[in-house]
Length: 97
Image (cartoon, rainbow, N blue to C red; front, side, top):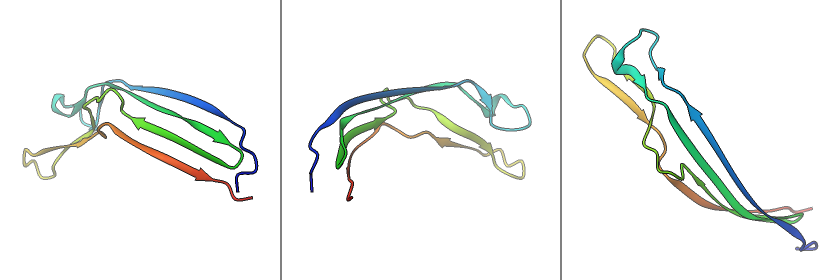
C-alpha cells in the first residue's frame, strides 16, 4: 500500500484581517462589527500515497462577531453570530492508485 515512502514535511500558516464594518444596510452604532484578525496553521507530512497533518484555526483565540442583526418589528432585540473558537484536529489521507 505504501509503495513510495519518500515525501516532504510541511508547515503552513495563514492570517486574515477584516476591518470594521456595518452588518446592516442602515447605519447603526449598535450593528457595527469591530475588525479582527485570525491566524490558522498546519504541520504535517505528505507523500504520493498518504498525508497526515495537524491543523488549528483561530490560534490566537480571538473573540469576534461574524455578524450582528436587529430583530424584525422594532422589538429592540439584537443578535450576534459568534466567530469560531480555537478549533484543532488531525487529518489523515490515503491515495489508492
